[in-house]
Image (cartoon, rainbow, N blue to C red; front, side, top):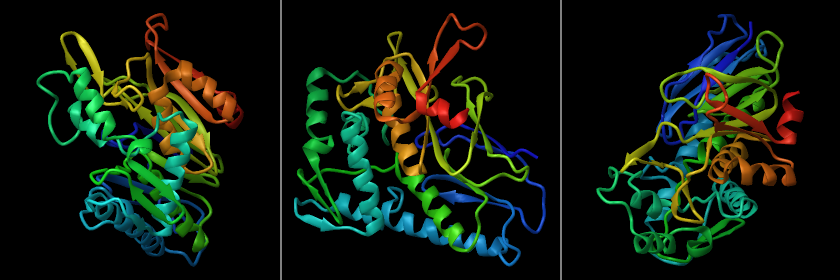
Length: 343
């Protein structure tokens, strides 16, 4: 059979995931659970005869334990929580895994012209998409400038190999747009260490798929139509030995005075994005980069983002709102690399 998944990015939305049933057999099993404020799903097929579901679960638990201990903003005892709580500007040594994620985050931040940023807390809170509800009054220009001064890698953070250093004592790092992708990658590494080569790992809509599904095909992943009133696949993509992530703006927003305000805040302007792009889906060598770039490309939108993707040979599919596109009301445009990988 063809394994098929239909998902929305749940880094902030935490929506349910529909997994195709896997035929029960000694060599195929599914593992599910909760982690990092969302859920995870792992499907393994053609496992070595000596590897059991319990072995795979131990590998999954070990990987998730590492990621949560170091990078979970939902764990008050995590390494990122300790760094956030340190009110100083001294260099802090960090674990190799945390350093790997933050170096990648800094690279995507730079390559995207600042569209991806892990220090957006002040702006997210200002616009009412944090722990508090939406603002009673829209932020003023002065409010936005003040929040921007307290956010942004350039303003608040120095990232080095094995260390982090705040440039403002109250700087905060949030890893929801890269940490879950890294978690999927780390699970994959642990599964491969015990001999599993055909698997799919998904955490909150970010995934890594390796080898083939039970039918001997690439894993069939459904990109959801960005319609908040329906759950249907807009396009199905075969994925093998790649990370994949999709980010959308169509479920988390508020409206005021007839204007729609998305939860996606552009770090460059300090304001919610207002372009026509409803979702961005990225394929990359790993789920960590797919996770980060999906957010960056949705911030950029298809017009700016497609030019960047083609210039940097990155694989992205944009889905835009388009009133002329018939019943669906959406049209898609992909980078050259995305078309190559899905041909």
